[in-house]
Structures are given as structure tokens and as C-alpha cells.
Length: 357
Image (cartoon, rainbow, N blue to C red; front, side, top):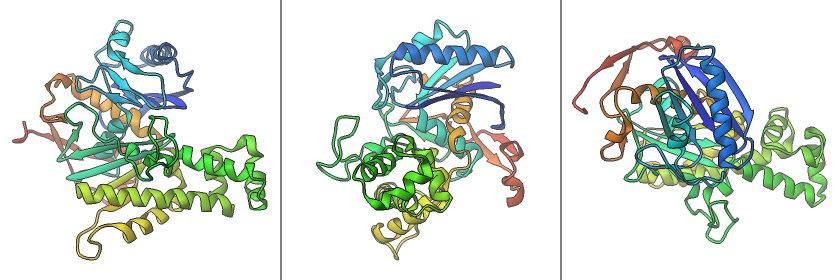
């Protein structure tokens, strides 16, 4: 078994994961602060607690930031205070297990490819909607990490020049229009304007101070019209960005995960509509499918644990051409759809070695 840690702007989730992607135990705490030391202490505490109850062989960290090709240093994080942070080195002195650090969206994409909604897709784009937007690309069974380990930062594509200020320092980034932060900002602006149309939403969530992404989503699922409209706006921007990604990368599948994706079709319906209206060459080309992620908020820790498991046989330092892992791919036995929905432990996996080594 391996431990996976998923570090986000608001929470740190940890879990013990077996070789089939099943979680044996899961823990979650609030991200303690933006202090690198505080986050590091939280990671160590979670690992120690889980390792005291389970036999684990490795630890994978999925970090919300740009991680170098050696999967050791967090170069920059828009939502945390990491700046050239040697996270692996600092943790390795305190955690006596093999350890890797990777981008949290890479980890989530790997989980969806290995065990979830993206199983066996030849070209898969993964988008995670949380505090911001994370992204990753899986090509022929391998994560594409780019020349410097920083591929997949879809959230910081400029979609509105001169638009809303982003935590990365630029203006008009995609995540300022299609993310949990964007959803909350728009709701709070409406509440602050004292618009009568906002009163029903305020009643549903419990007042302006209680406006959060999950609260808005819950209100929308419960039928509150303004909450559903706000999610539809986020979905519209999501679809526009996906159309740009599909024009550039031509994937067969786009998997959408993260906390905001729990809105389901309230988000993905408007996203598909905007995508269909915007995709270049529409009507004259095969089009990518847009699907909801299987593991949602657990994808990051499942993927981080599985990548750590791979690193025992193939250290990340052997990354070539931006692709890793390099030596193994997995063929899944065909299972009936009803079986594939019942849990990651039902996916039959058989290892094969191929010419990509």
C-alpha cells in the first residue's frame, strides 16, 4: 500500500491506497495556513498517523503548484506560499519512506486514467475545478509533464485580457471565470449589491457570511434558481476553455473533476452547450467527450499514491521527453458497465510490457 496526500488551497486530504485504487483509510484537515512550515507539519502528522495503522511502502504528495521535472521542488503556487520550495528534501528528513512530489492535477488525472472515467483513453485531458483550475494531459498511458514539469496549467490561460486579477499575478485567467473562487465571487457581489434576486440564495445558504462554493452547489441541487444560474455561468466559461484545449490537443476525452464538479449536469450541461457552439470545425470533425470524473475529491490522493508506487520501480529522475511513467502500461479486462461503476477494486488489471520502454 501507499499513502497519497492531496494538498489544496483549503484542505489537505490523505489516504492509504492499495494497488487497485481502493482507499483503505482517508483523513482530511483544513489547510493550516499559507505557511510552508505549517503545511509540511500537517503532511508529516497525517503520514505518521496513517503509517501507524497500515503497512505502507511509499508516499506520494500531490501539491497545488508547479513542480519541477525531478518531482522534488515546488517552483510556485498561486494559492499557497511555496516559492522554490524544496518540499521533497524537507519532508524526506522527517518521513522515512520513499517519497515523490507531483502536481495535484497530474495526480488526479493519473487516478482517473488508471482506475476511473478516463480508463484506456489514448489522449485524455483532465480538468480539476476547485479553488482554481488544475489540468493535466495523459498521452498513450503516460503523464505529459512538459520540458520543465509545468505542463497542464490550463487555469492560467488568459481568456479575458485585462479581466479579473488572478492570484498568479496576471489578469483574465481562465480560473477567474470557471472555478470555485469565481462562483463565490459572483454570488458575494450579488449579495453585496442588495439585489432582490439574491435573497432566495441568501436564505438557502444561511446569509452572506455562509456563501461558499459547496453551499451554492447544494442550493442549486436543491432547486434554488440563482445558484443554478451562477453554476451555469461557470459552466459556460468552462465550455469555452475546453473548446480551446480541444482545438489545441485533439483529445478523445475531457474529464472534469474537483469539488465544483459535484454540481454534475448543472455545470456540465452548460459546459457542453458552450463547447458545442465554440469548437473550431464543429460539425466537420469527431469531437471529444466531456465527462464527470469518477473520484471527484479523492482523485488527487489516489493518483499520488499510485504514482508513488510506480516510483519504487522507476524513479522520476528518468523522465524523458516530459513523459512519465515510461515503462508500464496497463490493459484492463472488459467488464460490464454495471460492474465498472461499483468500485475501483473491480477493475481487472493485467500488466504488460510494450515498446514504449
